[in-house]
Amino acid sequence: MNTLLQSNASAAPKASLKIGDVQLGGRVLAAPMTGVTDLPFRRTLSRLGAAYVATEMVACSELTRSRPDVVRRAAVGEGLPLMVVQLIGREEHFLAQGARMAAAAGAQIIDLNMGCPAKEVTGSLSGSALMRDLDQAERLIAAAVEASPVPVTLKMRLGWDDQSRNAPELAERAERVGVQAITVHARTRCQFYKGVADWDAVAAVKAATTLPVIVNGDIVDPASARLALQRSGADAIMIGRGAYGRPWMIAELEQALDGMAITPPPGVEARLEIVLDHLRETLAFYGDHHGLRIFRKHLGWYVEQAPWPASAADRREAKAALCRLTVASEIERGLAALWLIAAADDRAAA
Image (cartoon, rainbow, N blue to C red; front, side, top):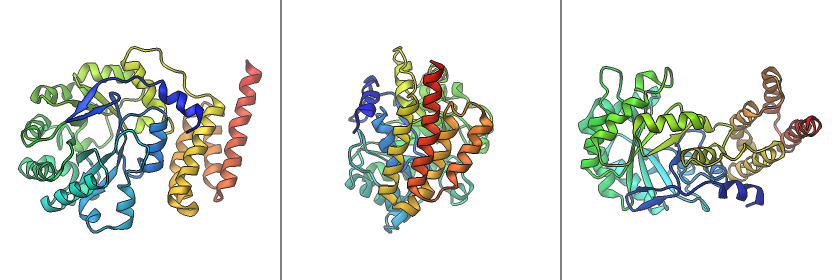
């Protein structure tokens, strides 16, 4: 690990949150996100101070058949502070087998997904569709808990829609069959990602269980982190889309929740180093051809979140130009040109 990233990681405080017998090193958790939280991105988050990073959503039925892309999605890797695998499924025997396989591969926590709103997931009666059948949800949770030698957690939504906000009841059932923590995305399934996250509604989940509760949704900066925690009464927060292009955000929010002075975001040259390290690790993991395709979304987010070029139109143009490149060395040169021009401008302005 280079000294720049070490210094950022060491800035994160060590707050207390315990899930089962696993002590976490912070109260800001990085959400599992399909197509986003692959092993290279999780390593990037970890180097920048994240204490908890989860895999992408892993379908148990495909994992047990050893489908290559699903096995790769479940890669726990080395050098992470905590190994968390998120599983999804609708059949008890597959979920139990997936839990055993994840634990055998090194998972220290297994998270169950009952919150994904995607139509291809709910259409197969998985994800947040299970909030319409709490008896089946409870059976699935019990199967995973019984099979797993490590703590099992649950991620869900407020309910299927506003007429069936049953998250408190599901939390009660989950605790009864052995789940060790609950994460609530503060929207219903029918909202998808629209509207505003209802952090106040998470307070009812907190009241329904003695377990640690993590609030998720619309947390993008220190102010929203503090407010989400206050209004929900939760024990911790989970960051998803707010970390796009800003993997150092986790450490900033840890500092905010602990009342510490917030370390300024990385400067021009530091950001360039972060992006290039992430790119190189992605290529090493997937190979050049597939890795470049995978990395493009991250590349776009890094450019969108940078304060340079100064105008949004110029950033969009730079993003489009970089994402059209098909050779890694050309992307590195393009990034260096964009970033270092900005560094020169910063020095001139100072």
